[in-house]
Image (tube, rainbow, N blue to C red; front, side, top):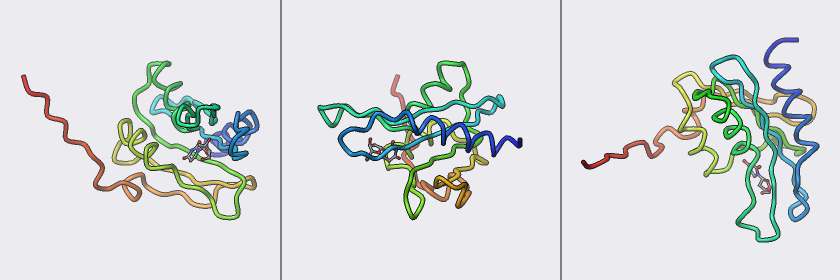
Length: 133
Ligand code: THU
């Protein structure tokens, strides 16, 4: 199995474990870290709606908790006619750990529909924190 197929299978499988009783919209995410390891995440909703978390957020947290700080590739999967793109907040979360070559794969249940460079999503992302000493 190639790494991209593994990434797809990982996101597809974790999506089935989504906790999404309020939206009934299950999302899976799988990150390929710059270390070659795969990290997975799914959405976790809450009865207090704003407390819910996104699939991408969970996968990135897993990567950071394993000591990896660069996303080589990220795959997002949902069961939709058109593949979904990461929400605005998740684009900023991906940005934090993206390199110039980071790839975003968009998938439906049958496979990857498109693969784009992360910079196509958020070319002008906020990235200018000046810490005053
Ligand atoms: N969701 C994600 O997990 N990732 C996204 O990029 C878009 C939205 C989740 C949040 C919520 O649980 C459900 O999808 C519906 O918005």
